[in-house]
Image 1 (cartoon, rainbow, N blue to C red):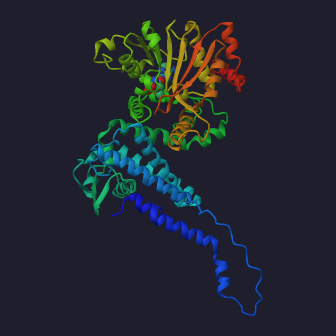
Image 2 (image 1 turned 120 degrees about the vertical axis):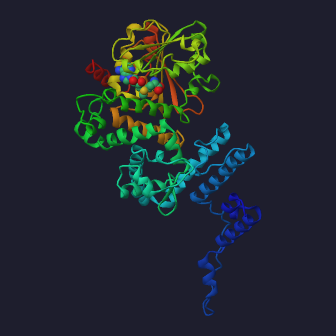
Image 3 (image 1 turned 135 degrees about the vertical axis):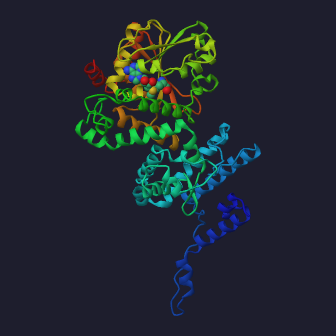
Length: 517
Ligand SMILES: C[S@@+](CC[C@H](N)C(=O)[O-])C[C@H]1O[C@@H](n2cnc3c(N)ncnc32)[C@H](O)[C@@H]1O
């Protein structure tokens, strides 16, 4: 059996390739029209001057489709060779295959990414533009099927290595038989469940993960039951309130009848099961590739260098720090720093006690109830840290978050934001760009909020006060999140430095910030 590469590169093997090139040259040297006209030559016809010999033409380069197919073959063979050489399982939809692609070294990871990007592009080319748009849109129906499957816990209703008939499955749910069959059969088109014989349902790797991974169930639940309806209500929201900055006028509020009443987080706070689902979904996201907290502490690969603060036994305040898991990871790497994790009272109350099984680590982390829209009570800390916070707020609120720090800040205090930092379109690889821009849309749907570019972060700091000196953005290797940093330096020198940057709508942001006071 020829290898995948040979098959796809059928005409690029050395010998046959050469033959093809020659053929192509022949074809271009004697175009079809010329050879036909020579065959039907009229003997009475007085021949014209001979046509000049055309200069040899380069063979046409392969089409984009072939280029992509070749790249897919090449990169797939690299990944496959690595897996085989390291006795790692090759990917399959089989129920017993691992839930995650094996961890890969950087170069092989890059090949995997190339496969993901190139297959998507090839798929779209093969569909053509009209069909791509027409049918791409219907992915929301896959989301609907997954919503129903997840909500009714169908994946958990039979063991991973057993089959079940549709009739038996029906008896275990309140779903109507037609609805049960149709959602399963649509999901099967995405390798979630399979039907080995008519009416008999079996698990695949994906349906097994849905049955076993509580955090993934929460992720699916949050996205389908909270974000999906919110997204469907963005249009009425932005038609009614085109400025789209208010937390209580987002698509989410239109979907759940809370317009001008309360923002999403308050709605969740009133419903413990929804709040728990949000927290678990966040944990699922944080465990996902490109979002691991480990990136933040991996100094060798671009993580944040806390060495100076650590050497001085300094303090970091983690605002909206949930149950302190980020501080736990930083505390493991930096052994002298102390941490204060602030969050809303209900979140603080629900934190595990002790916070960590190692008393040395737990002893350096304190939990504190604090609303970050009021003045910061911890004065003179070395670092004020925000992870996944700023992207939850439009500019007026983001500016207010920073202003609330000012009375507590000592000169030299660092403000560190760990969030996406958007690059110019096309500078990110297409997969990461799609993930980040989708997240930007999620923020619009649920909170009228946004992901930001470096210039937009710079503006937020500038609008919050001249003492914030914007230092810039770094990004750890393999991580989608940026580390955005400013220093509090309320001296005339600092003011001069911060004034060198061009304002982008700074006055509008400042004015809006006044409104939220
Ligand atoms: C998106 S989560 C981020 C959690 C954590 N920083 C992380 O990296 O996963 C937002 C957090 O902000 C908290 N939060 C929301 N509003 C808050 C407020 N007004 N004051 C303090 N914390 C708040 C939420 O309870 C939640 O823990």
